[in-house]
Amino acid sequence: MRIPMVAMVHGLGRTFILLVMSVALLCVKGPSTAHAQSVTDTAVQERPDVRVVVDVSGSMKANDPNQLSGSALNMLVALLPDGVSAGIWTFGERVDNPLPLAPVTDDWRQSALRLPPVLENYQQYTDIEAALRMASAEEANGWRHVVLLTDGVVDLPPRRGTKPAADVESRKRVLDALAPDLARQGVAVHAIAFSEGADVALVERLGQQTGGLAAVVETPEQLLGAFLDIVERIFPADQVPLDNGRFVIDDSVNDFSALVFHPPGGDEVTLVAPDGTRYSADNVPPEVSWQHQPRFDLIRIPDAQHGEWRIEGAVGPQSRVTVSGDTRLATSSLPSTLYAGFDLPLEAWLESGDDAPAPDGLTVTASLNGEDFETPVETRLERQGEHFVGVLPAPTATGNARLVIDAVGDGFHRQRVQAVNILPAIGAVVSSDRRSIELVAEHPRLNRGNTILSGDLLGTPLTAEAIGRQRWEIMLPETNDQLRQPLVIDAQATLDGRQLNWRLPTVWLNTDGSVGIDRAAAGPTLVGERFAEEVTDAADQQRSADALADRFVELVNNPQLIIDWGRNVWPTVESQLKERSRDLRVWIGLAVLVVLLVVWRVWRRRRATEPAREEPHV
Image 1 (cartoon, rainbow, N blue to C red):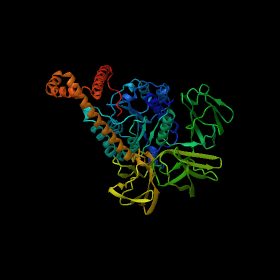
Image 2: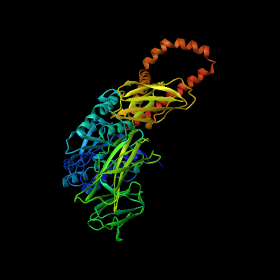
Image 3: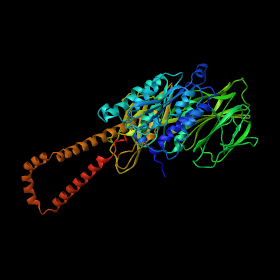
Image 4: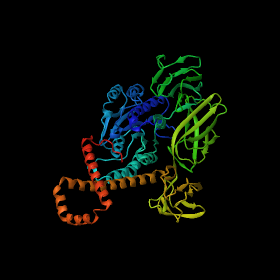
């Protein structure tokens, strides 16, 4: 049975806070980076901070059926390392900061323990713009990472302006002004949408413009995976492969941490050392840290034995083992957003604290895989001195994916895993009037000066005309609306002296001549614009219905209006009734009118007893 998203969001939100802090602790021994780039002395001194922004609008008001929130703050207090800056904001109609951004100390931990009642002060509306502005305002010693968790859309209170125009304008300010400004300031926004009713396009474009990640989740397992992807982006760490519950700790590793996901209520997790020593949540020595939660166990082993370890019990696919030691795998900048049709240059190397030589026979490969990939995209990096360089072929699928850099040598194995979002380089969708194809460049460097687009509809060539710097339009010929027809669009671009050629995802004209929004083809810009149009249209229809209802209520509440109307109109009605008294349709119409009046009175009485508005969804 599908789990209602509104019923799991709140507990999962607090669980995410714990995962952020937990993985921060796992990575604390390794040098942090100010951004996703190679480590420098300056970057080591800069430490990114984490600002969790939690939606507490009416739709988030729910119990925690998965029991994920019970030990949330206890994990936060236990695992957050001293000196890491973190804070928590909540937002609905207003923005609150119940846990201010500050270095973690004993006093900060005590404040965290008193936080749960504050996180349950639900509000009616959803002011995403104000939340982002306030949470990102305070300066930091390094990159600011804002983690936005929401299940709704921009929904301002009526006092902020006429709806939906005020909502649409706020959303536009977020994308056109606020997001670029945050990117210039060194603020990355990582956003997670919890429900199908959320503004997914807003989430994706926030990540795209600021260098953050974006995810849409439908299950608790997906949510925990998305949390972990964000944390690994903020606090990158080396991993060793985990295969069928087994992993190898070589002699260059000092400590390791195992994050083991498992079904709630499953068998107890047991960790077995190379010498046969068995560890469990209730049987560990003082130096071992073991946090047990319903859906995962987090285990940290200092001064770990070298050799093969194994995990007994259910080991979920999101499980991983991170390591720290004298040797680490470093990479060049790994962007959070890739574009279909564009390859990715890569560079990797080993860094060693004691300048130890690289392991014999070292090879480095890279692979990219996601749910929509038929096969992984792979390449081998070639050695150039102490570095390994190569180019990852252009992906054709879009969506969330994982980029894995894998280094293997004699008695040595390391992985660097980073989540990425893959967007179409150019989005395409059928226009609202069904007469043309709208195209928008998602890749920031593509424009009408360096890009040529052409279409083909069942052998008929179609030309794309530029209608803006990064916009094109393909006019559609008259077609048979009863046939489902594919429109193929080819792109050619010249960048840095190279000519690139790729094919956009096929746009299908459906049987009624329209097309549903295919996210793989449309991209977040066009999806967001269509979303805003639908919101406006729905609001216009609602205002028309409200106006008719208000007029009806006015007549009911002011009988004199009905009397005046009757005096003026009744003579005509009476004559018509005499002429049509034998017409059955007249009596059916009168019966329908009586039924509608009864239904309206029942609805009005129920409306009067309903609680105040809590759900702000469109």
